[in-house]
Length: 448
Image (cartoon, rainbow, N blue to C red; front, side, top):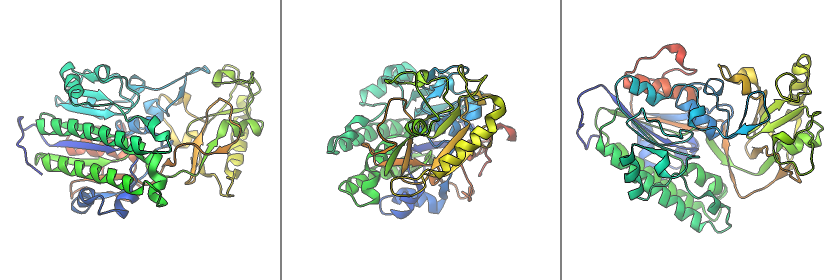
């Protein structure tokens, strides 16, 4: 560490956070030759596995990681959420996150934050030093602030995301090339602003790791045709993080973390198809496409990933479940879910979590009543368009896991104990920055 002298006055310690979306801890632990730099951080500082959140989906995980609170407080439960008192749905964006972000706390202290490629941050905040939004954002020009930041990103061929559609092709050559190009431009932007050294918090996310895992993880775990390409991609990731570590000034602590783990996907499980087959869900039309098409007699419906809602009288517009029957209907659904077996005879679900055990806050009015956490190999889907079978296979061969996310901290005074989870990152980061907060602000605890 320490190639560059700090260009600002001495305003206290600083932190650089590098996100590696969806990278499981065991991958780093099992491949030290692929990850020499991340392995060195673990040995010289701290490193280990941590739990994600319920549900372990990036659209919910990153708001929780960057605020330190659960979806009941952030108001974001997944890639698709439901309007209060309606069957209308929407895709949550940055303005839907109702809790205070880490970089806002830093700016409130009169310090500066550079934020690059964090999912669910569009439109970019104009209160921070500079920001380009990540996943689900439009073109760089609209996703970045200030204007000169966007102009620089355009000049280096920066892109918001990899072209995931290329991963659907049987020949993965074009997808792998696109992943490298996206990663390279992301690193160039990271490097440029790390070396600019004019911030107190640098917060950047490599999301291409998640994309590569979705389409190549089975190749890694089961010695497929693209295993070496998978490892070569991760050699680049590790090399880039090592270069960032070397470029950081001595007053900067480096944190590297993922938002969930990953494993091989064997079956996609279409839960609204299952609910329909089991008599829980019915539609008003044969060509149904969305939640608005469910019939009055529907008891339950599902959103991705594994979120289940009772069609509750007084809450849903056409609710069919009386409030007095809420607990019994929910318990019955939970039992049926836990009994579900896949085509190979394995239980589909590891556990089913009740609403009150996972969510608390001012925005729990759209919380799912149950969340299913799958066993490895079962990826939970919940579209409303018709599917012929409950179990099938698609172009992806990797899936998120609740356990085995990654946390690395380049500081020997930090530990990563058993039981660490995503909620612990926010208070840890603020302690390292010496930014004051109240203990009750977060669902986690500082590791510093």
